[in-house]
Length: 130
Image 1 (cartoon, rainbow, N blue to C red):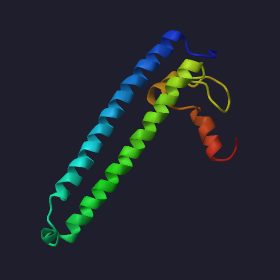
Image 2: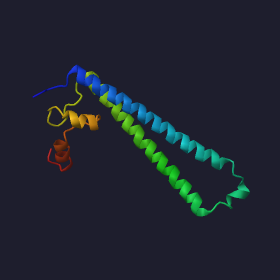
Image 3: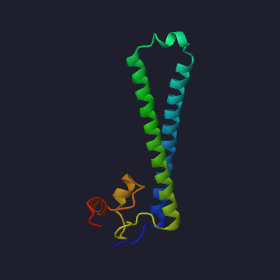
């Protein structure tokens, strides 16, 4: 049974992680643009016309902005987790379960490259069995 991934496998993971990081950066940029556009659209409203805006529309706009901030926060957190995965590639701990110390399967690492635990170990941890 393998103890670590080979350099070739780690390079493949690294390329995939960098690609995901680019995608996340674009998504965050799009979200920021949407937030800025919705804020700038509201800034041109005169005080007299504020009352002509329907209350439900204002609530919907507020909800959409809040949702966009939530998405942006989640994407930024994912980006940081991907950066941590790149650091684990560099220090040689990438793909090694933090709980049992065994190699996490390649399939799982391709789907969730920022993971640090086997599925079974993570479930046992959630149940308080670890």
